[in-house]
Amino acid sequence: MNTGRLAGKIALITGAGSVGPGWGNGRASAIRFAEEGALVYVADFDADRLEETLKFAGPLRERMEPGYVDVMKSESIEKMVQACIAKFGRIDILMNNVGGSAKGGPIEMSEEVWDSQVDYNLKSIFLTCKFVLPSMISQGSGSIINMASTSGQRWTGSAQIGYASTKAGVIQFSKVLAVQYAKQSIRVNTIVPGQLHTPMVETRLAKQRAGGDVALILEQRQSRIPLPFMGDGRDTANAALFLASDEARFITGTEIVVDGGMSARCD
Image 1 (spheres, helix red, strand yellow):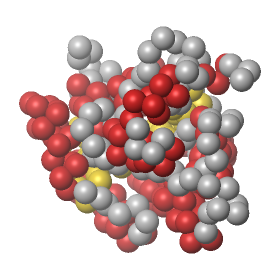
Image 2: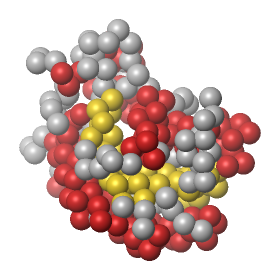
Image 3: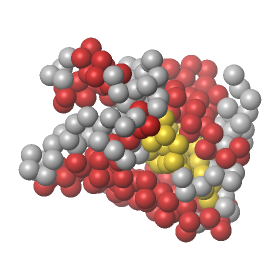
């Protein structure tokens, strides 16, 4: 359904590929934004993943411009932002979707992995905002959507101290940014996905937490969700669409939790 909720908007989405077949958060959001009228600069580290997103998009790929980015490198992010503005003239929506977990607490996790988690999950958002905000300030408007995780709010079944800490940081980063730039009509919000069935389950999480047993980890994750099914990247995308649209014009500095009620449980 296309109601044009983002008609005339320019969106930049990082992590717009997906680590495997199916509906990752970035891929689903890119397609959903295009469905609602946006022109979307889709950026990823992996060209093959981006090409698969374009195939998923079908005719909507005409509304997308693919580009490379390494979110661990400041110069790469700056080039991505410049390329998006050169192509479309401005950036109305920034969606920071890159992220990933590593298992372990302070004893098990090496200092190098800790530093990598900080750079990948938190510093990357700092850098994209650093280079996108001047354009939004100049035009006097913008919507920034940052991706966190319920792991940044509560225990979610396994020790992943770097991921949990950085995702908590994303939530507070967004709040500070929202207040700082509210007078420029730039809104900043966070989406907090729970244990969705995205391609990350098959490609990474099953190996980390269930010895490669996909069915087992899906059963474990579903057992924590009150609703009788598991959401996927399309549920995240619909939340992002709302925050990106003018329907959310008076919403900033807050979070939308997409977890099927998991966070409301006391166990």
